[in-house]
Image 1 (cartoon, one colour):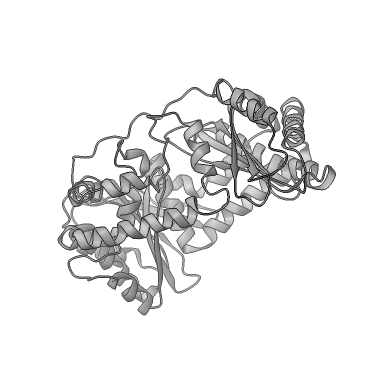
Image 2 (cartoon, helix red, strand yellow; image 1 turned 60 degrees about the vertical axis):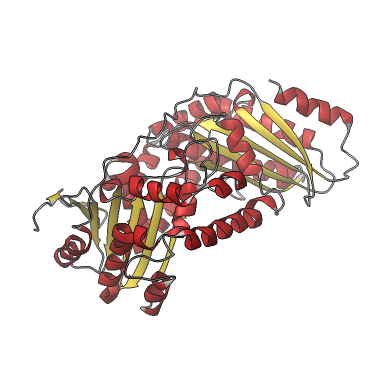
Length: 452
């Protein structure tokens, strides 16, 4: 093994295994062999997301995700895309509250190319970063914001609910997309400093999964990444701690050009990585996870007041997680009737908990989702990076489903009673523009809720 490496012993779970190694410059490397198909996935997680941003410079993490595809010292312009796709591979990058990731899935014999490309931009991106590429990608991100948030029905709902659940000044108050004003304010110097601070090997985890030879792969990683210097200037993210509940309902009424009335609500839930978070995930699955869920059966099938219902969980490790309820109404159905039905179903669930059949179905659903993620080399690489960056141990990715299956109905009932309450939610009510049901009474109700 090359000098500077440390390694953890291999563990095997259900036929899946992974080993972890560390280069002298701090880069953590996770390898997982899978010779089922002749492909290999490279996934690189940087421990930086929107929670690391400061006021006035929101959106930098996401903007930089785009800049990473604008060329580096040896790869000009869009060459990263051209080389990967020309070799028969696929690639992308994403940004979240808690990380930024980059990934390629390649024919196994092209693995070295993907490693070289990732190392080249980690080590040399600043040599290619200039005002032209910054302006180009600033415009791309602003258009993305218009297309995905500002100019689509209900597009700003998640942004609004997030801001209501995480108060002003909290690191999770704003979305990774950032604001138009902050995107305009970002300078080349801001981008350069952001890269120096966060795009260092000791702030990253590299996972390689698939039809690989571990010894050869590790030698390539050492060859291309080993000479990149570490950087010790990273500031820790701000504390994301909050009370378990909101302490009261907040409510906002929006009159917009939307196709139907809608009720959306967000709840504070336990942070990811604790047993209560798994229990909360199961509770939301029973209540709103598909066409067999309680809320779908009540609102869509029985009452026929809604055409769609969903209740999902945004898992967060550095702050309380968030449960998001989304109900689109049917015909002339009144929001008040849906409100009452949701409250009734949540109260009944908190009092009685899930039935054995519901518990079995919810656990099977979450188990299937976990298996789907680990079934592909790209999904497995991403999960290994996730658990390494956010929880310190990539092996946890291979045992996540065990923790879901260990949760009891009593724990699901308890978390529902503690968290899925009217005094722990932020609510958005959408009324289509010009809807005759827009009454003064409804407006007053919404204002009173927002003042709590």
